[in-house]
Length: 224
Image 1: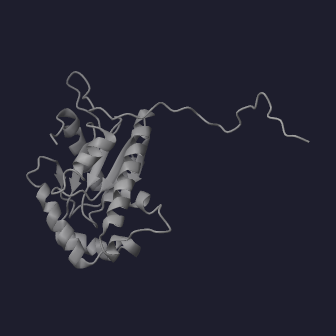
Image 2: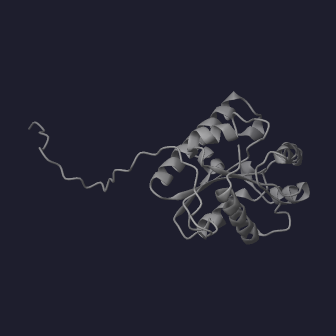
Image 3: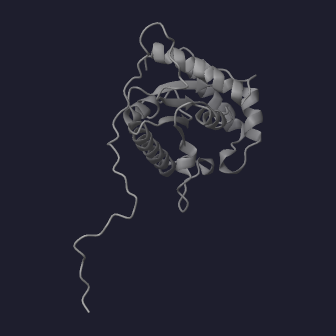
């Protein structure tokens, strides 16, 4: 018996049409004398730092404790969606691993824009180097928009080495690689971006300082 297509099939998928995601605009401070409140404002934040700086832990805590819906988008988590053919930089940096990082950043940017288009804040974390502006901050600005607020998390080298030693799997780097990355991150000093030295802070304290930094960034956005 031939199969015929019914004239009307009810929508049972629960699909909801989302508004298109576009570049996030620069956040504006509230009027009058009230100080901007970063805990109840829709924001897009980029948390920068070396391996072992605590980016993921701080980003998760910050997102968990906001007054408005907030998503945490981890570059490493997205990159590890690749199972077969995963290019691990620990095995040697090459064009394949570089391409997977670029793909992960574009994917994170697309996700961030869709969250923001639906009123959900987001915080992204990435080890962005100051000496690679096209791939780093320039790339994130293209992917998310000029309203993205970058903040650098940069504890001392000893702290970073200690935290990295507690990591496992492909996220744990050699001491030499950690020191090299940390040295390159020092280039953020003098860049104009806000820098948090969380060497003597726990996750909760760092998140509070991050709120203070973001309040200043909303009132006077950094030039980048």
